[in-house]
Image (cartoon, rainbow, N blue to C red):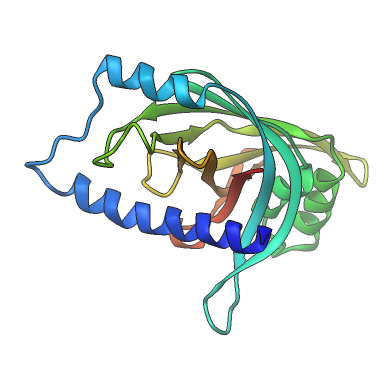
Length: 211
């Protein structure tokens, strides 16, 4: 049942992204929320939410999404403009580091052993559903996460970055069923001031599903 529920939420998010893109491309359709609407949507999702985060990848042969890893985390919506993912395992964030070289693989392994991290995000509520009070929606703009690791006696500064300001990074909440899900996309990593990034199509999604 839980797997079916997760699948349903992921499908809801995929369908929502298509609808949202269509709405944004419609010049005659103003879906921005008023200050009063923002506060009403915020009041619905405000607080701490326990759930599970999933690192998703793609099956090279058929292009379908596959689950790479999952873990219990909490997500808090503290203000109408901020959200935090708490205690995200470092091994999830390490997936943003390429392993094209032995050095990068060693750095990825070192990052994966670090303590869990917080991902602090800016959010903006947006009214694109007709029944927006039933489905509060918000864009998510994640901040970077930094690590200092030492590999073979050499110190490295690693910054994990995310795609922001995209219709693929967002949250949605069904006030009737209390179902909540969100997605953020890792864009790559900067290692010692050298950036390695991936395209939006190849980004690693972290999908949060409220329990």
